[in-house]
Length: 202
Image (cartoon, rainbow, N blue to C red; front, side):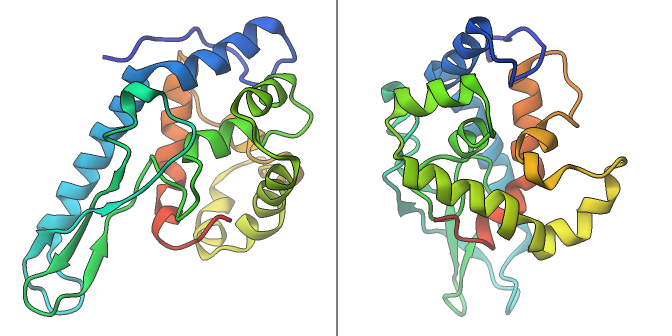
């Protein structure tokens, strides 16, 4: 079980919210919970078999060197769950709530740090020592590249009123209803998980 963090806005410019954001990225149980979700997603992918020939899939995880997770969870985040076909050798990688494509920073960091004009996001960025040029690249991805992905083009219209593109990812996170911030964040990470195998977030 992950420790609940009280509900409310992730983006209020308050010391309390800053502490909550810091608590999320320091809580090993939260990161282990994301690993459990990825394992479930990987198991479902394996059951489907090879998308090319229908052959059986064999475990072929590959190494990762992620940034943004606590030391206690670093070992389990050192590999991306993946498979290769026993018949045609095609690689199949399941979607992930942990990894944002090939980006070295984890998806949760990309979500929490990229909010525009947020004191809590700014404090977290400073704590993780994320360079300003990196943050600028992430902001550009959220506001210019993400809206043009086939994924968003297919699901964006579900949100009414429309999500404000210029305020992503804040405007997306705010659409998920949950009693705790961690639950809301998990919902958002599940939602964008399809992008973890289709888009490289630089």
